[in-house]
Length: 325
Image (cartoon, rainbow, N blue to C red):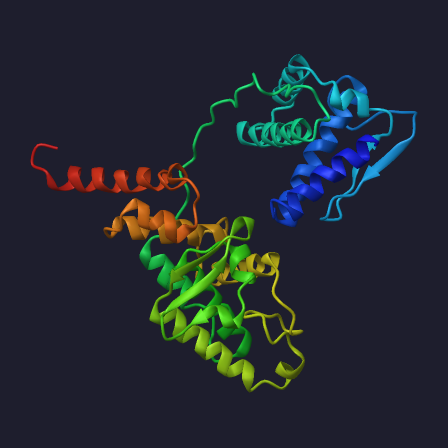
């Protein structure tokens, strides 16, 4: 087995056994490609001359370019070599979060090799992930959310679709990848909930508000009356003008359009609506465990970052109201 097969086996494991998204597999592929180049050259970078070159193609279609003679280098990597790689990343001014992600890729890769008995020991076992500076997530205030949600013209089919998408994201706090994966059958109008397929294909039921349901109804009504509906994807909830399921990139482009029209911060992303959902829920009395379940977080620590935002709000209220503050 060559190192190409070794990497492909790992990438297929991520997709078919761990159910990682194509985007995540693509990131892992890129990280492994860089590490292979580092091993090949004895330093970082993807340059180099001579030797045969092979391609490891992950399920996402992204090629990992490695020389076909470095399999032995991969399976005999030492802890010191990994530390040298991390030092190289620091010299290249990679951010702490990017370095941590690359380290996580290697950690996962060598755990996989160890389980499959391709290596005698995990060279990353003694390496700790560097402590990162946790950035507080950006969120929109309630009045800005209202302004954004009211921007699409729901008298048109595409405007009604976009209004429904924004309403659903803010009402449920789902990820944009989960949004585009929604089917019409996932919406329970009577029970006012949505079936969501989250990371690792884990399903959860999450409540949805009547305003978002009304926006979905409005969109579906216009869609049913549109002649193009006969050839559109009958299963998908949100489709493009050609009747095909929307992509996450398309959702981002639509959001950018409405941010510009509403005069809001252009750096806001679909994930900002998720942050806004969580922050507003906690600010209005929801408990952390409930928000964790609604967001589909596996670990409570992931949700706890929002408590920094709410604590800041409480401190401001204290300073404004307490006589001796």
